[in-house]
Picture 1 (tube, rainbow, N blue to C red):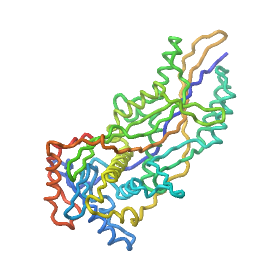
Picture 2 (cartoon, rainbow, N blue to C red):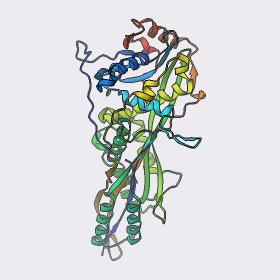
Picture 3 (cartoon, rainbow, N blue to C red):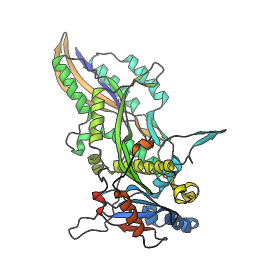
Picture 4 (cartoon, rainbow, N blue to C red):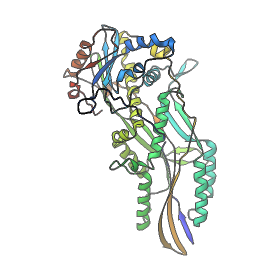
Length: 438
């Protein structure tokens, strides 16, 4: 008699992305220089308003005049301005004005839902999950599954199971408009991460291993040692979440010293009614994969630019939350009304459903048992999300007692050609002052 042992893992969410990098500012060796740049939000609003009724904006305005990474902002009280500062690293994908505007509107509660006198606010996020009817079918199939069964019967059951999981899954977006670029990046990064749970080794990053390979290796080990202390049948959810955040400040300047993205996981199970219920703890293999992904996030983002795009969203959201928390517009005497109320955020198509993913792997180890032998296999299905719950609190800030940030602020204000200038370059000695690994 042939018997097949099934191993089930439910995992995270994915998509694809193409990055367009500037070819300007190359030095003689062909390596593009990383410059520091300041961009005036006051001048940017004024420039945008001039093109508002033409329904067409210059590309440089829509890409923040070449900024590639947000570092922080400077308050210009004299000219009633807020100046965002960052770098122009040509290896990074472009920043987009729409993402900044959406982050500001979220932080300043423009997307909050009002019912009576109560506002209901949500941080930006997304989720890709099976529809209730899919979970109902999964429950029915699980009730039909036998722990050990003839190979042909088990494979037929597995094919039905995978077919159900490949049904369309619901895409939900929270806290921002569904048809926005901000939402598109979150959903695309989420969906791409799901693909990498079973294809991470294709990136050829040392130490990054497919979770399928991890499960198979453990399955082989347990098969050989007859050790079943670690359950291989598990349901895990993965989602992106803010990592370590820290900010530095001095009068009139706020710096994002550290803003990271991490991958979290939690084991789940299907309740009798078909809902997915969190257990409050993570399966060891899922936790190991999430930690490896988090530790190598920068390397992964270099090969999959959609994750650099996702990090940009986290930094925009952090910047907006700091501005709200610190009362930056009031401190500068600058109205952000054009960004918060008037600017028409472009519509981007985001699919309301995406196919579920599932894969099957089998290794041929025929281990004798009473009356026959066993053949082992494993198959995977997926769900996941993004949660951008960036909560700014005063204990996340450290005061710059050495006066280094004051030097940066003075430089930004001094090098501005005139109050109407949109953007200008500043000196590059910041690398010795700022933590550019953040």
